[in-house]
Amino acid sequence: MKLHDQAMDEDYLSVEFDKAEKKLKDALKRCEKNACTKPVIGKLHIALGTVYGGGNKLDQAKAQFVLALQADPKAALIDALTTPELAQAFKDAQKEAQAGGKAGAEAAPGEGGGKPPARIAEGDVSHTPVAEQAVNTPVPVYIEIPEEIDASKATLRYKPFGSQKWKSLEMGRVGDGFGVEVPCEDVTTTGDIRYYIILRDEAGDPVGTAGSLKAPHRVPIRNEIETEPSLPGQEPPKRCAAKEDCPPGLPGCPEAGGKRGDKGWGASCDETTECQSGLVCLNGTCEQGAEGGEAGGAAAGKGNRNVIGLWGQLDLLLIRGTDYVCSGSDAAYACFYPGGEGKQFYGEPIDLPGTNGVKGGLGVAGARVMVSYDRQLFSNLPLLAGVRLGFAFGGSPTSEGAPTTWVGDDRSNPHLQALSFMPIHAELRATYFLLGDRIVEKGGFRPYVFLSPIGLAQVNASVPVDVCDRRNDEGGLQSGIGSNRCPADSRFVEDLDAYQITGLNFTGAGAGVIYGITPNLGVSAELKLMLMWPTLGLVVAPTIGPVFGF
Image (tube, rainbow, N blue to C red; front, side, top):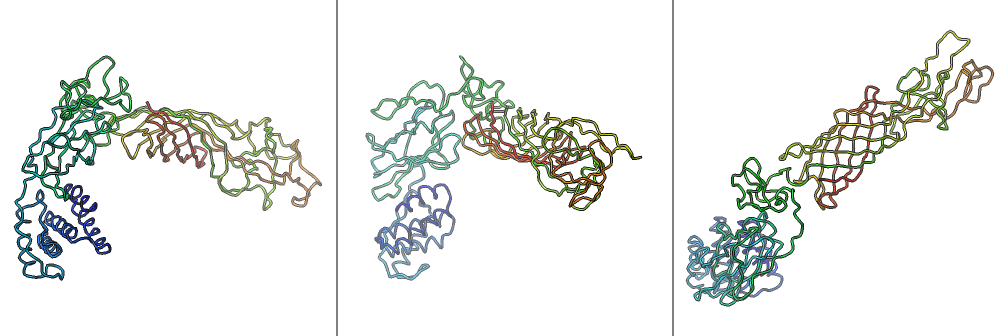
């Protein structure tokens, strides 16, 4: 019966016939296993036939009515949901059931179900909603039951302003009718609360309605009201504390010491103060402000439009495999002796397999810290432009000495002294958020993509390399040294640091996500690719840091 109520009170009234059909068929299957009583089986078949009728499947509806009458000869249509077409299908089913015929399934002859009751029109019970209610105050709803309607239960179906879903509340006995209060959590903003009421008898069958899904009653929610409504014989409900303060200056909030107007959503306006609280004047029309609502859309003006951040970035350089890295012939490489003292290698490596070359792969090039500022450019488009400034750690050492002049040889020294590593980082950034209405959203993930069309940075990573050097530290030629790896006219130099030099400019792109800890504070993680130029290189840069929206 719970499945029955969900199917008819929620899915059917929401015109979701497929969901209602599935629940009712599930209920009938459970009856096969649990030996439900005949009245219950009859009621389920009546409901399933009603669903088929709502979808204009009258032959299937008639078949279900026959099964209902065969299970329970007293089965009857649901008064409030009966149409002339369903009533005729039910009459035909009565004749077939009395004649012992078949309607979609084999069944024993049943007794006549009696004349179907007359249809009670949708929204037939008279009801007057309260004139208005204040924000953050429960809304009293009361319905007086006419004597000719035998109602034992009443259900309030309501939809708060801005919500996409209908909610349900069971109404309690109050005087000569039923009453209930819509809770504060659904009265947090100005706008209309919509609702209708379903009355049921002791068996749970609908016997009347006040309002309907398509034509619900409405109660305006305002910041200020003239009279305080209440249920009969009770005190007016007390105002609840607002869940969040509305600071002056935030879109949709009143200015300090000022009052908001009474123009609702869609009304023409010149200033935000003319609109009701929760609305802003946008393009000459009162529209939804910071918290969203029936205005809908991904209006990026909802929430914060400025974001600052503090970032930590790891630089991973894709080192290209090559030979002759310490020969001075490749401007993208500079070799240093190990130890970090800045002593650059100016020797003359000989061409020997297994030396003076590196294999490709990712190498840790250092890290950098940055601060950022981004600004949303348009109120209805989640596109931001910004800048990042920072300082890099690591890179290559600063060369402490100029190249040694070679003597005793007619060739000039090919090495150039390596320039100092540039630690400054600067970039321009364009960011586009993919989902949601806010840049930082509490408890939510906000993915984004970005492009850095131009930036200033240098990324240098080292790889160990061995060489057989024909020169001594003074630049003269070696003689009679050799080793198990090098010829006699060279010396073995082990574990030189060959730095690949890239930059000083770059173009970058990537994607990231912000997780909101509060409506203003979040943590962002992103992955960036940096194409370094004019000295080419590709950098993979994972980045993480806190961000703050305002």
